[in-house]
Amino acid sequence: MKYVYLLIFTLLISCSKNTEEKCFLTDNVFESYVEKKSYSVKQILSDKPDYLEIRDMKEYRTFKKDSTEAHTYDETAQSEKKWKAHAEEFKMFQEKFSDQFEFSDKQQANNILYALGRNNLGYWLLKIEDNKPFAYFLGISFSHYYINKIQDNPIIKNDFFQVEGSLVKIVKVPGLPGYDDYSAIEDGKLFKISLKDLMKDSDHDGYNDIFESSFGLNPNSKDTDRDGINDFDDLNPMYKSEKNKFTQLYEMLLPNYQESLNFKKLHYFFEVYKSDCDYFHQIDPESRVLFAPENERKQTYYIQMTDVIGESISKIKKDNKDPDQFYIYKAGSSYTNDYSVQYKNGKWLIKIVGQTVI
Ligand SMILES: [Ca+2]
Ligand SMILES: [Ca+2]
Ligand SMILES: [Ca+2]
Image (cartoon, rainbow, N blue to C red; front, side):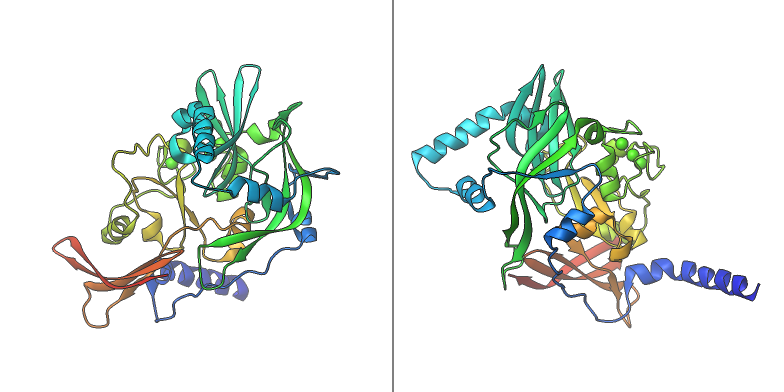
C-alpha cells in the first residue's frame, strides 16, 4: 500500500513539473552532438523491419560504381541534355508531387505509373493511378540502406516492390557537420517488400501504416491528436494546437518558406523536431511538422536509426532579473543562431545576438 501511495505521489510531482521542465533550460548546459556508433551488417539485418526481405545477389552494381556514376556532374552539354531528359521523364510526377521528392526509376505497369521518391524523411514508392498521386513510405532508413540510382530491373514485379542496393553507413566529414558521406558495408542486396504490406493504410487517412508507425502517428486512427483534422490534412498531426505566448514564440522561429507554396497540398513535406516541450508541440505551423521525443528510448525505431532532424529550436532560458526576457537558440546542420527575446505589450521582440556559421 505504501508503495502505491508513493507511486501516485511521484506521478503527481512529475506531472506538475512537466511543462516547466520540458520547456525551460535550468542551466547553461547545451547538448552537444554525440556521434553514434555505426551499425554492423549483422545488426542491420537482425533489426530490419519484418515486412522487408533482403536477398544476396550474385551480380550487382557496387555502391561505389552506382554512386560515382549517378553523382558525376559536369558542365558539358551532355549533362545538361541528361538533366533535361530526366525532367521530361518525370514531368508527370513533378506536376502531381511538386518538389516534395527527388524522383527516379519510373515504371509503367498496366495503367499505373510508379517511381521511386526520396525526401528528407526517407524513401517512398510513388504511384499515379487514374490521375491521382499516392505515396507509400518504405520505412527503410537511408542511414543504413542505399538504393541504387540506376536500377537494371523493374521496381514493381509480381506484386512486389523490389530494388537493388547496398547496406551503408554514414561517414561524418570531420569539421563539416551536414556534409555527410556514405560508405558501403555490404554490396549486392535486393530489397523486397510486398505491395500489400507497403500500401496498407488501416485507417484510410492517406498515409500508409509504415509511415505512421515510423514517425509516431496512429496507424489506426484517422485523427491522431483528435483535433478534428485528419492526419493527412493536419499540418501538426501529432499534437493539438493552442494559442499562448510561448507557442507564438516557437511559431515565429520556424523556417520561412516561400509564401507562394501551398503547403496544405504538400502532404509529404515535413520538418522533424526533437522536443519534449508542450509549447513547441502546440504550435499551429504553416507547413507540416512532426516531433520526436528527446529521450532516444522513447523514439520510434525509424527515428533512432535515421538522421531526419534537419533543424532544431532549443528550450527557453529565463532571465534571472527580467520576467519578460528570455533566450533561445536555433541550430541547423551548419549554423546556430542565438536570440534574445522579449515579451512586450503582447508581442515578441526577437533579436539575434550571436551567430555561428560552419
Ligand atoms: Ca493511415
Ligand atoms: Ca492515422
Ligand atoms: Ca488531427
